[in-house]
Length: 72
Image (tube, rainbow, N blue to C red; front, side, top):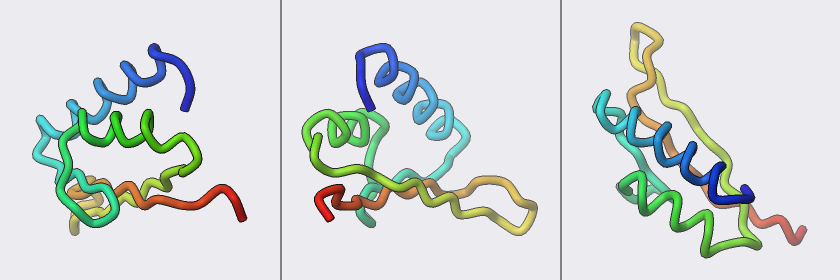
């Protein structure tokens, strides 16, 4: 992800999920929107795959970011 605008947009998106009580995690650990955005900034060589976990009604209840190595 490149650019401050993209990161600001991502932060707003994740904050919205957090307000809806969606459990946010990065590599299996609970994380705040800021921690997730910072991980994207710091780990430029690593990408993250989103994993949406839904409840019985089909609403997002968890959003996980799992690191993937782009050097394969």
